[in-house]
Length: 56
Image (cartoon, rainbow, N blue to C red; front, top):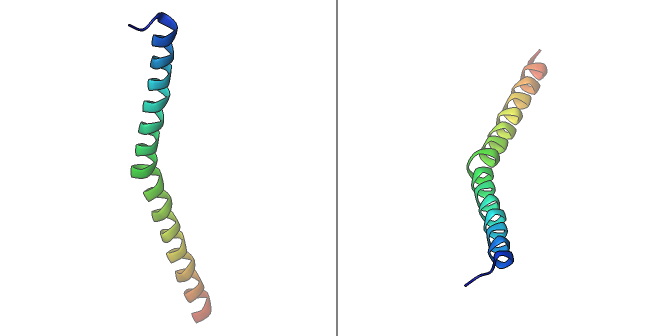
């Protein structure tokens, strides 16, 4: 059996581990695709503006 200090350490470790796991999942499924999509969209807008400025 675990005494209280070992059990609390195990719970603390599991809390940090699961928090890191869900943070990683959140970053990989929402933040990174949003960041990449926004970068691509901004580059498209800048190229479109440059093309319009060159044609005037």
